[in-house]
Structure formats: structure tokens, C-alpha cells
Image (tube, rainbow over all chains, first blue to last red; front, side):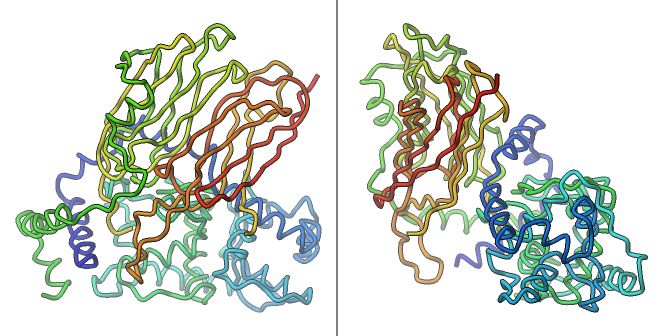
Length: 256
Length: 156
Length: 111
């Protein structure tokens, strides 16, 4: 029954996109109040934990050394992930790069879905706070390929409802109200998802990475869920990151 | 019916017809009550000793008109007071009038706070009034209230 | 039980003696009401929520909060406090299972 109800409600809410959408729109004053919550984001506690975990691995200096950059260049370098890393022979997100670092220093890497890895990789990405996203999809053929694949993943309609990411994130519906929230513009002109994830989700009371959020969305939209760290998932992150290129990184985010 | 067909056939009438029975089902289900359950009137009386607080603009209560999510509703209460040893706010109480236990938080302050303010986040089970009551050092009670509309959590 | 992650934040970060500053305490806590059912087992999840938070500055209690189960998961508590010399701010919480934990922040006014 619960499941049945949930489906009915989803349908009702989806339909509110096309009629009577205005009545649930939030006022600017309300939105400002929610923005104020960022000042005390519960995820700050989790990033503090992530910072301790990085210290155990040798801290920022060890990370910079591992990546072959100077400590001063670390923040802008991190603002360019996902990247093609020669020694991995593949395009990776920050969490997979950290798995490599742990492995190479003789430690058992945290799994991508573990809370340790979410906290650690979120903290590491936050080292790039105030930097602009500088991903370079033309850096090499691998990045070009990843971007092209990411675009396909973004646009391919799948699952029982025949939805793609693009169904809800295209220019003609951006800003429409779905469950009190305007459908976000993922690009740097809008809320630049790649610059504001990892984020604390109030509905889940937890910190999630962009890839975990993609999984949640696929699950809700009845698409088969793509595994974390898979070629397709990393490609999708590349696509989102390119869309948000130039936006200033501000982590952790705080989302409904 | 297949979900796909269902979506395709969806119109205002169809949505309405399907929603109504579900909602009334939800309303019929008994709500579990915790051991702390206390209705708002009783909770208020317990705080004020039966006195009726005076509605005052010295108490500023900030809550959203529409909550994004009933599980995290920001609440800020500020009370105008010099916060000196002879004139200060002793306590700020926050109630959610329709929660089974209407009490949310009771904050006991002293002049060492410098300013009388509380900010936190509460859970609201449904659309309802949020009430802030300030207890002053002279024994007076002031209050402010505002309704918060809680929309359905939905697909989660 | 492992220590719960917690944090004290003071705003502004830099302050002088006598200044009134905003103090926030947050902690990772489930704030279970005891009225929620486990989705798989259909059993009620036992209540587990913070009942009390005490702000203690250089051994003196500044603020006491009596807390009920209707506060959000991973709650945040913000009030003001008047800076009165260097020292230590301790925030102590107790929960309905009798767990007590302390978080400490050094207070260093400048000048």
C-alpha cells in the first residue's frame, strides 16, 4: 500500500508541473531562510572527519606529492576533476584517485560507497573551495571520450517511465516547480550542481556525492542504477562538471 | 494497469480520483503516540502555570511559510531584551501545536547570553502553527506564532 | 559507544573580550522519536533523542536546553553568549538512553 501511495503521489506531483504549479512555489523570504541554514551545515562535521582521515594518509602535502603538483597548485588541480590520470590509464573522480593513493601506500582502500570515502573525498574536493571548476574535456582523447559518453548517458531515455536526465534538466522545464523546488539548472548559469555537491541532503540526513545523488535520481525515476565509479558514471560526472565549468566551488552544499 | 499507460492517461480528473482514496486511507490509519505525547494547551499551561501569554512584537519568530521538508524546518526566535541582571529573558519555549508531543525545546537563558535568541531545526508532522513563548525575569509571558505549511515529502 | 561527531562554531571567528557572539553546537544524532517504523521489519524503532544540552563557559552554566524528540536529525542549537575572558566553552549533551558526551572549544578573545 505504501508503495502504491508513493507512486500515486509521484504521479500527482509530476502532473503539478503542467498545472497548478505556482501554489507550492516558495517565497524569496523562505528561500533566504533555507540558505541561512548553510551557515551551520551538519555536513561540516562529516568534512571535519574527512579532514582527519586525510591527515592519516599524510595530509595535503602527501596528496599533492601523490598527484605530482606543488602544495600551492593542489586546490586548482582538484578543481579540475574528474581527470585522466596516466598511472591509472583512465578518467577518475576524486574518490577513485584516493583509492589509488591508499592502495599505493599499502592500505586497503575505502569502498566508494563507504561513509569514510564519502567524508574523505568530500573534504578533499572542498580543498578546492573558492576555486573555479576548470575541467578540461579537450585535454586528451580520454577526456573527450568521457564527455561524449556522459552526454549519451545524460540524454538516453531509460526505464519504465522512459525518462532521461535531460527530461527534467532541459531549458524548457528548468525553473518549473516540482515538490516546492524549482527544477535546477545544472549549468554554471544556474545552481552549478558540480560546484555544490557533495551536499548534505535534508531528506536523507546524510552527506552524498554527486554520483550517489545520480543513483538516487535514477532509482526514483525507475532507471536501472549505474554503479559508482563505472565508466558511465564517471562520464556522467564529467558531463555535469563541464556544464558547471567556471562556477565557484562551495562545499559542502545543503539540499532538500 | 501498467504504470506507463497510467502516466500517459493522466489528466486532472484522473489524478484527483486516484489521490482522494489514498489520502483518506492515510487519515484513517491510527497515529502512534509516544510516551511524551502532550497536547499544545497542556504543554503551554505547564510552562506558564495557566497564565495566558500576551501576543507581542517583542518576540520575533521566523519560520518558513512553506516547509521544503517537514523533517527539517528552520526556527529562529529572537526576543527584544536588555539582558541585564534586573531585566532579562529567562526562557524561550518552542511548541509545534499539532505534533503528538507539542514541546520542541525549552531554552533557559541568563544575562550572560548577552542577547535572547534561539535558532534550531524542528520536525513537523503536518501543516500547523509553530508557537514561541518567552518567559521574562519579571514573570511575564510573551508569545508569537506562525503557521507553517508542510507539503508532502513525496518521492523522497 | 563511539563518540558522536560534533562541532562548536563561533561567529564571528575572531572576537574581542566583552563581545556578544553567536554560538552553534551541532551533533550527529538520530533523534529517533520512537514512533517511526523500520521499513523492513515493520517494528517500531526505539526512541533515542537528545534530552538536554548544557553550555558551560569557564565552569559557569550559560544556557541549558531541555530538548524533545521533535528536533531534527543531526540537530543544530544556536544562541548568543557574551565573551568574558579566555578559557573553555564546553557543551554537554545527554540523550534518552543516558549517553552523555562533551564537546570542547577554546575561547581566545583577541587584544
